[in-house]
Figure 1 (cartoon, rainbow, N blue to C red):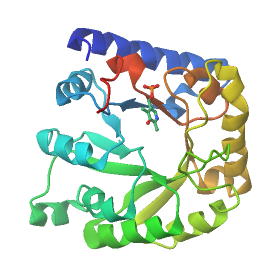
Figure 2 (cartoon, rainbow, N blue to C red):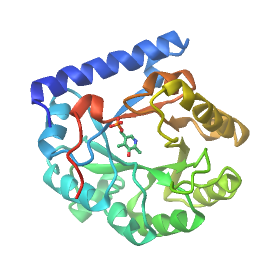
Figure 3 (cartoon, helix red, strand yellow):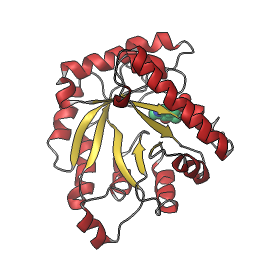
Figure 4 (spheres, rainbow, N blue to C red):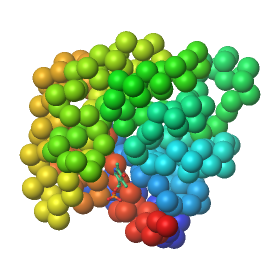
Length: 249
Ligand SMILES: *Cc1c(COP(=O)(O)O)cnc(C)c1O
């Protein structure tokens, strides 16, 4: 983790970077939001970014997310977004962090950090399981993850299955369909990722456009500009804000 003061500086740099990219693409900068990806970084890093004004944080692992939400339960307006693969059997843990209407939350004694969106719903089965677990609690924003390049190693639904998964999400009262998300194959040259971002944009257009799928979550530290020029509304940035991630073991 890098020093809290430099987390603040880097956050400002990344916000400025995204605004510049939006302006360069002829877009309104307010239509692109920054998701600070805090996975594997300690809660102190999240607090540093929170103190600098950041409210939306991306996490990949359910157990880590649950532990962090607990530690940060005093930060009422902090929002977590799940951007890592979600197994159906863990959906209940994510659902437990979804807030409902204020009166329900008060009854359940629920407060503090919450899960605002799950950006990695990729099967009808997961959509149904998540919906069942969220139940009467309220509703959670959902983005459907698409495996645009058809990589065998990646999660996300195929473009062919997208229609079915979108319908399954829309059929659930406790899920709010918001858009699409993708993690394209890594390439040092961000321009080579452009076709994958364009593919996600085209899929959104084909499946209802901005009316039905207003959010496109795409772009990371090394390719944010290209993603913004292709229509991203959420850019997920980790390393450029928090520094390199500690090795996983
Ligand atoms: C880790 C991660 C990011 C952030 O990647 P950086 O290169 O650190 O900016 C974005 N999206 C997903 C899905 C991730 O897992």
